[in-house]
Length: 324
Image (cartoon, rainbow, N blue to C red; front, side, top):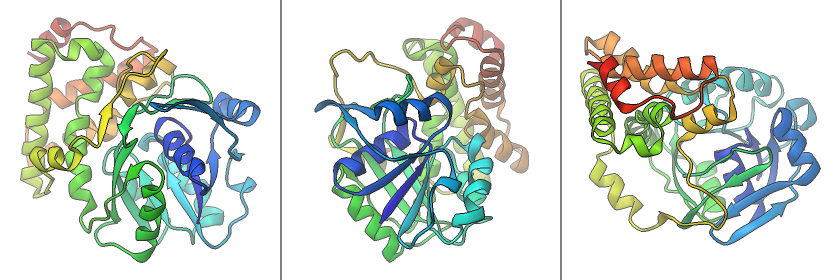
């Protein structure tokens, strides 16, 4: 198989880099300064084993990659950028299977409009991408756990082959017939990303921060229940995670925040809030469940991104006051 990783940020760079290190064929797809850095200097990947530079082929888009049998498109762009990426790749690569390595639960449905074979991936992979061409994935002994399944349900031989390659590349890759149960559970956990982005990682642990996170997750659980959407329990997630992926100190690397925090830190102009907190807001409106905290977090995180505000520049008291 040849893995075409669309989006060489924290998740895409970590997965692509680890697959490449294990001898699997990989092409990274990147834009702007990240693409320039990857082409000029390679991917600088830092894990608990150390930092190394990987010489991985880099493409700007589908016109630079001739389709062939055995290609797998791994979509690792954030969901707000997914439609443009999927449209571009569907024009020449529509016969390739697509793996949605994304937060949220909307990417798979967007992909299935354009590709006949779509797989969901629940990404447990704490990683950071703050500088062009550089990725830090600081968990061990596994870099991450990547539950995968066919969308909307089921498995396949193709998926088992992808999982086998990931299993040789410092990941656990359980193949499950109900991958969206895992992704909806991850969605609930990701409702705190907007808090982390606007308050900062330390402030999220304050009494006000913890209360706001619990209120957001409570709204999320209520909305999923009203919609009849199943999700994996926190206990089942803890059992599966075990001690397989534990954050480890990496010399010279400071702790950073969530993917939304990183988007603000890089000044990208957008965050995933519409597809995280916004997913709960949507379900709440559809099924009559109030979601005021998630609405506030969605609106606030989007305003931070739009205005170019630095992550963590809001105090817990200010946000708590806005939340009532």
